[in-house]
Image 1 (cartoon, helix red, strand yellow):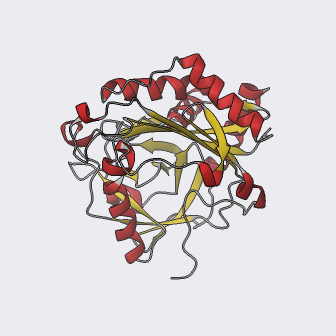
Image 2 (cartoon, helix red, strand yellow):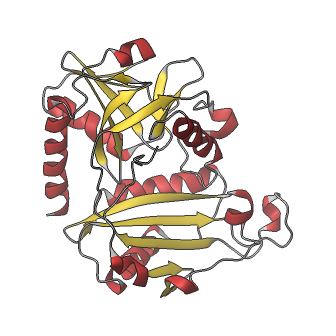
Image 3 (cartoon, helix red, strand yellow):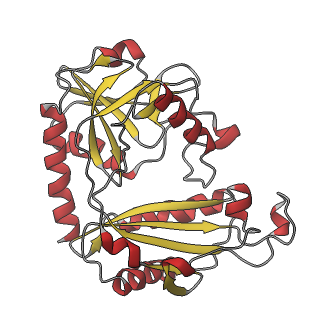
Length: 302
């Protein structure tokens, strides 16, 4: 299939060839932003990250993103070795160095740092964390709604790898995405351990049935900031919203489906497992939520 999309598809921007990247206290050209092969992130996927978007000169929902980063780092016993204010300053410095004012995306990453030997024990990471910020000019460009395929890869239990963590270890999601592409879809729809519909490999998932917005219980999904904003917007604007278990049968019969994430905000879904969802185009509830979310962004970044 030649027209596969991703939920992170963006306009090509030549300026990204000359971006500057934050790496351990220095802001360096892209070609110089390199880490050791002994780095815990490269070697083992041992680290956490955040994705943020810049609108009108401000990072949207910055406090929530920084809180989530530090919570995740604490959960995996990783000392970021920077205060919250210092992390925010690094983000601001990188933004200014790149002359970015809006329509930019940042990937803020922290790994356990360079290891003394190539093995997994955390005590072998003795040099302190590796902190990196990749910042790109980024305007989402998804020319049509996304097609999903249900895959056998699950969003698992917290005692395996808690799906609420933005972990560098994304192999489960990558395998899910590969399975979906092999099935002719763009991305994967993943179930939870009980067989209920949960998330995609990259985003949180919603359906609309008879004017009601449904999403998963939240027990097995990513701790999505955009997901929560959509739930809050529904409650504030008299749109019925439910966090509940629902099946593929419910999903195939939905009037609309959409994804949420920091990068694409709300991305419509046209097809799941070869079944057209609603009209196959963005539906009226999704469109209204998009408009409400844009207004929220304007208020947050004014």
